[in-house]
Image (tube, helix red, strand yellow):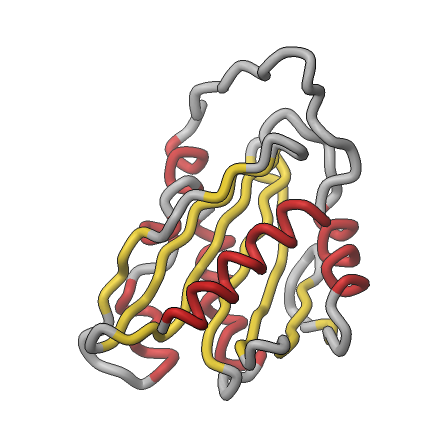
Length: 181
């Protein structure tokens, strides 16, 4: 379980750092805008975007529990990452991360292309308007990532689970989270 969480946190930090083109100005802290819509507020709570029941169905596991994961905010690029960890009998079954780049101008397709470039073996996944990539990393976890604009804000969504999860299993989970954001 700890390996999956460490891999997830490392991925969230990497994508938060590699997905934005310009660092945030360091001369003065940017004001924190209040979420203007329910969708913006929900995007900060991935457990609401992807309920445990949906993950249970995809993994064919009963009694999955959704637990809020650690926040990973980056002052370098303005990324505000929130996660939801899915557990089965106390063991990690996967995690959903949602990273909002408030105050940034970004194109979702470029964000996805950046991840693909950074991750050896990443493969395009069809069926996502702005693209999606799937890869299995050195920690033996599978990840599918996509991005979209939510109320003009670039948002990166990724699900990381056991390496045995295929892109076909993860894609509906990421699509559901994107639709809810």
